[in-house]
Image 1 (tube, rainbow, N blue to C red):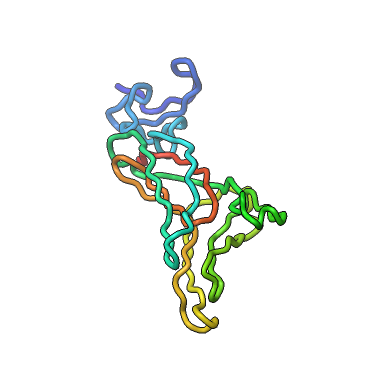
Image 2 (tube, rainbow, N blue to C red):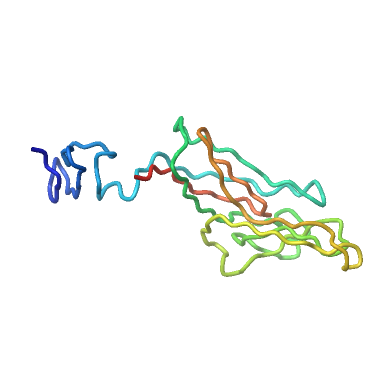
Amino acid sequence: MSRRLIIGNAGGGFKIRLSKPGYDALTAPLEGLLFDADNYPGRIYASGVNDVAKNPQSGLPNRPANVVSIPHGLGHQPDVIVALARAINNPFAGTIQEAAGVQYIGHWMYLGKANTQTFYNAFPLNPAMAQRWCSPFRFEGVYAGSGGGATGGTENGGWWIDYDAASIHVTNWLANDLQVRWTALEVF
């Protein structure tokens, strides 16, 4: 007869484990458990922290996003990737705006085009987001064309993730470099 439930000291540490029928709660593999306080609600396969460069401000009016692939080293596609990011730089570094005292270190910034301008400016998102970790988000808008009346093009902003059997792909449409914390999970 196998032990289905363990609560207490078991093999050097406090454990709470409930196994499926036919498995011993002390020795069962993860797929043989219904609950394991050390691995709930899923098992962490891999995790990391990576910097992702800002959006290159080229290709007007439809500038490209910066897409960075980060190998997760699993050899198979994880069940889910959970990620947060924060803005880690001043997008005005080395520009005339910085010389004028504009400081937005740690502020989430997007690139926007106003009417007939032939260049993009960085605009802060909600100031309450400064210095905060944020889940993936994306927004899209339309800027005015010549004279402010006609449609000039599409503005994209935000960051998001995708993943496959080899890598996590981080897309950055922002004016900031990002620091991305990610975790690959097996959910059971």
